[in-house]
Amino acid sequence: MNVRHFFSDDEKRQIMEAICAAELLTSGEIRVHIEESCPVGPLNRAAYWFAKLKMHKTRLRNGVLFYMAVKARQFAIIGDAGINARVAPDFWDGIRAVMAAHFGEGHVAHGLAEGIRMAGDCLKTYFPRSADDINELPDEISFNS
Image (cartoon, rainbow, N blue to C red; front, top):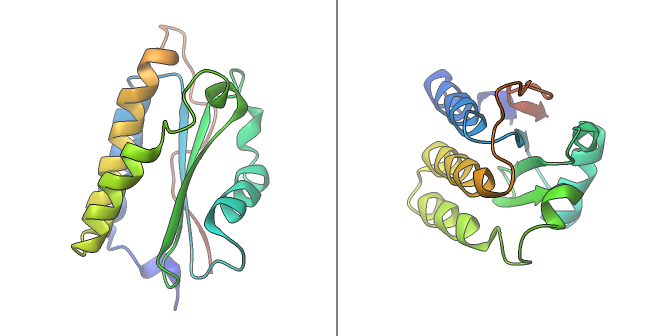
């Protein structure tokens, strides 16, 4: 399976538009990483990719990674230390539940985009976007085949 082809071009565009829209609300930086399988638990694998993608390099430590292992049908959401220091431990649970419901109906791209939009909306409370905000991380989806 080539995970680069898991989503159609329209679905990739939908996901990237959700990232851009979410980042208009918050200084938080959102990325999506997709791979085929998950050799360890999804949270551990998300943490690995979070570090590998250098997401901890944001000024406010407010990066968020949406990780998906498509063949394994696993996903995780992981936030950086700046977020985790300010939010409740169950902060991501509601977003995960909404995404899982969409995934269960076969609407993977829509569920991912909805989760991203929800994250932007939730993060604006803790990390509002400032007038001089810069995009610190790429908005493109990253893949590992």
